Amino acid sequence: MPAIALYVCPQTVLSSLGLALDSLQLANRLARRRLFQLRRVSAEGAEVGLSCASIAVDGDLASVSERELLLIPATGSDIPAMLNANESLLAWLRQRQPTQPLGSLCSSAFLLAEAGQLDGRRATTHWALADDFRQRYPAVQLEADSLCTEDGARFCSGGAQAGLDLCLHLIALHGGRALARQVASTLVFDEARGSQSRYAPLLPEPQRTPLAPVLDWLRERHAEPIDLDAMAQRAHCSSRTLLRRFRAELGMTPNEYLQRLRIDAAREALADPARSLERIANEVGYADRASFARLFKQLCGESPGAYRQRRLARG
Figure 1: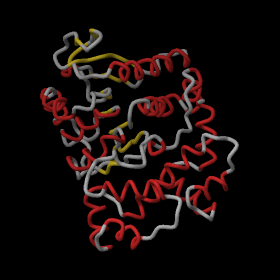
Figure 2 (figure 1 turned 45 degrees about the vertical axis):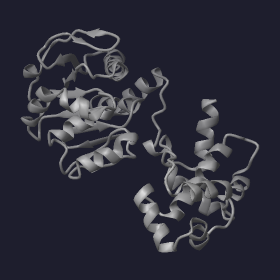
Figure 3 (figure 1 turned 120 degrees about the vertical axis):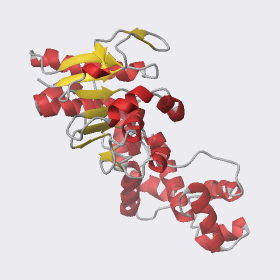
Figure 4 (figure 1 turned 135 degrees about the vertical axis):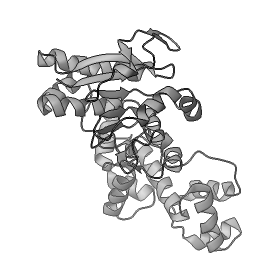
């Protein structure tokens, strides 16, 4: 029987803890047997006060066995504060051997990475934290688009609800795909969600930087034929200088930014069922629907038709 200890600390996000417990307990009920042995632990075994609740636990970190999966729910987005507040957990994690299972939900991947437990391994975290994660932990093979990853005895989920994707993965591993589908259906959860990229914004948050005037100009004319020379002329600099500024400030080329502007506009247009895909492609600047569809899938993780169907179903 797989044993899972869910770690609770003052930074634990209650919804993440509840999501994991509910789905795994539901798997036990639907399987009509104790598929998972579940419990909650804290650093010293004491009750943990969260912002809106106090959580009783069943043991401390020292009680977690070598074969037991320590699963850490999300711990919020203030990464420096979270790492500083969990030194005892980090010390315990550093002693964990490669074959001894560990798992993270959402932002708690930073704890595993800080302890060196993800070096050389595939991992994921919330898409909004991906850049910070890469800078801090270059030895980790971050797959920011993935909803969940498994690499040896290390399990990670992406942001927020992706914790359920990881729990369903664990249920499928130990109880079979049919049980995982039954749990997903009972929770009214779509298993076929693809990747985190469909939820991430395509463009960086707007900032009033030296590039702001040319970015405003591009937003107003994104559907028009625009080349690098035209952008550089608008920015009153050379093409080479413009390329350097875009890479430094936005992490992408001017053409990549323009593509994202167009696909972002297409995502909004797809909310209107009366507009055909060919019409939308033309409206955002693509004469070739096939090229538009390929780029849309590359940036959003799904086809324009699948995106429209999911968005309209969501209401």
